[in-house]
Length: 482
Image (cartoon, rainbow, N blue to C red; front, side, top):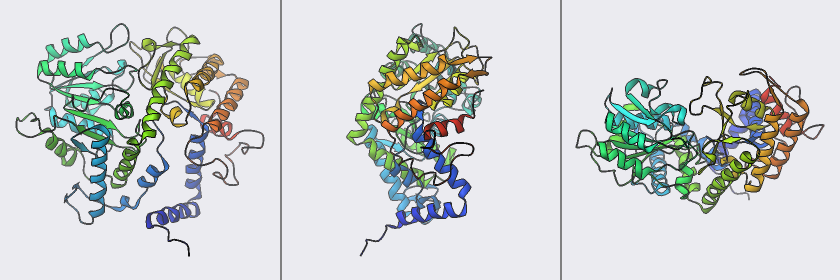
């Protein structure tokens, strides 16, 4: 007699079957996304692949639970299992990062940053953070962010070698006496000296907040120094490098009992209040379950091996691109990120991004220091090796990736800031090479065969009948040469 299917697994099976039967259009779009991810060489620095078990947790029946508050102190009934799940996620977050306190409810790191700032800075108070064009983040006081509206933001930049200008940080801190100093970046390829940031914060009586969204996996694996015991609060997303769902975390180490601005309330208590009820209402129970699963994977030896590969791959990729004549900012990288400076020629970030996508390679345009082009155009290209490492690709394969990227840029004729022509023969050749690399180093997302069923994408040949799945999907996504 066959063993009964567990309730959650049965629900997932029924849901998948019902979706295909009741909404084949949506089901097909979701199926095609799986094919695209498998057949695309993703080098976007701000993402990683979630394990299927993480995706399963994210689609669990916990989505049906409404429960404001925290475990043991909910404002709704029916949260007994969710309480256990959230406690599990908190414990795993603490273990993964060596934290004393963890809050797993933030819907994103942007939400976490807003909550932390609300807890530590009065409206109109001063924050000091990295300039956006130097690699900072919108939520670090950019005028385009609510943080730039609610607080007086002062920004530091980079030195002549493209690294954090700590002397400038100290000078600005002394001049402006910020309530919070933020250490963190969305586009900086070098190691952050959290101890130095903390010394500067202490010199002016500021709280130190570390945003490690882009390097959280490296921090958890010991490949980058941890700020958890140095910062008064550490924030991170759970999807950029942790292989988790969309979401954020707030972590505190030895400063968990340090008083907040009122001189009485411990920072850990302030953060609880800052997330709920100050900045969020009901948490996302299914996402918290997915965070719990992802954080369990972070604790496994395989994750640490992958993070080591992430760093080795980025260094190899930077070296290979430099050897091909590309200007790599700071001359290399210490983490997962490689930034290419496109100034000095007609090529722009948006053209490079679009031409590469036509060929099945994903990398994003990015502003660079002193960029004179608009944010939607930019003069930089940002690359990352998170997903390449998750595919099991090593440093030797980075030379192939660099060669393909170089080949695409060389085959692109620029007609304006956004307009270009990509040689069709080179496009098809690179697509085929990308397909071969992806097939040799597959993602853990199932097989291409059978995913699309009997149909094919409109206007394209099915895989195996005159073209590869990678070429078909890439072409459909890009929509042809601009």
